[in-house]
Length: 564
Image (cartoon, rainbow, N blue to C red):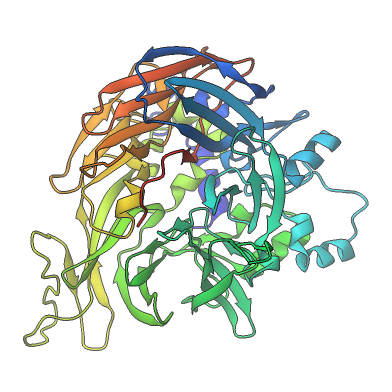
């Protein structure tokens, strides 16, 4: 089933079994989809004072920067997919116990040209642009070889630092530097001009010395290859000349896709002390379809192909040498976010938010979101769970018996078997906890790529008793704590460690808030004690325009603890 068929499946199942029986009835009454469908019409350029309750810790100083969908409208037109919405940045500035709020649209070329023309002029992930009558077939052919000028640079997914600079990300390798104090868009950087990649993930990793790693796709004479790109921290010469991370960028490892013209869609990747972890799911980007879509200016979503009969592959690549180490096979699953990964006692432990197929992407079409309350299949299609895979780095001593469990990690219920000699090891996961979790975050500074116990997330089950609530999951016990409040919808929780933190959860969680229903101009930020999920403080703001729910962000603090 391809992406177009999945989209039609989602949008056409408005009644389901019983037809008219479901009409007008809310199947998920506690889930308010309006928070995703709002369009901001007025920025908050000057910091806005709000209503503060509780007491913000004195040591908490910095800016919570958020990124996400800002407006589904351009003139009289509407984007068709949530991923197409114009990027809106949010800033919650925290200092001396007070908090202010700002918001500004990312001034990407797509945003500027769309609004100059008052119509959608760039084709997005799920939305076709209005055809330009002046563009000939030869212009479109030329555009295939100059994607920088024709592909949307609407970087509305995430925010990451390169040294002391902050950049917005999407999966096209054009990023934007923003001012963390004013949210002004400062610079547009096309990474493909510095290193041979045509796309990259929205979630790079930042390690102890400020080096940034990301996974991209490189086009070579031998065909496409997955490429791990290293961006060393910026440096200054003795003469004061600055060399940016992008000028130093280089590919440190490559891996061919299993299907030459159908590389996998990837939103993130993992790393441990010794390995890069590349999870190759059977959702592929068809290169022939991609070329046709570029010629016809059709959405990229139509190039995605889901192959349920094929397994998901988990590749380990040595960080030191860049060489492929081992590949494991798992039953097909779809994912967007990896929770964490680490090495322990001769194994790699991989925790990941898994879905049985890729239909959750199509659940984010605007029409599918609008029809959610009358679609009995929506909850199932969006159902994901946090799963743990354990990958044995070597085989335990003893006879090589088919079906023997190679996992010897103490306390693990995971399974890894080699069906027959010479075949890949097949891994079977264990369920971490029976609740949908998305946008997972950990104590990143100390536990990225290392053993950890807790992660923080948003409940993603639309039929959950408290959909959209904040979760703290204990991976050792499989239990979770919950924070929720009627009609309040928090965003991805970001952990900020306390100075001289004594434990993994010694700190606070920061989460941006929006309110459902008619309270579309009400925004806020929540400060929770990370151990108990007890509310420490919050700030609420009344804004001049609607505030949509955001996706991902970064905390830029005055106090920066030692990173991994």
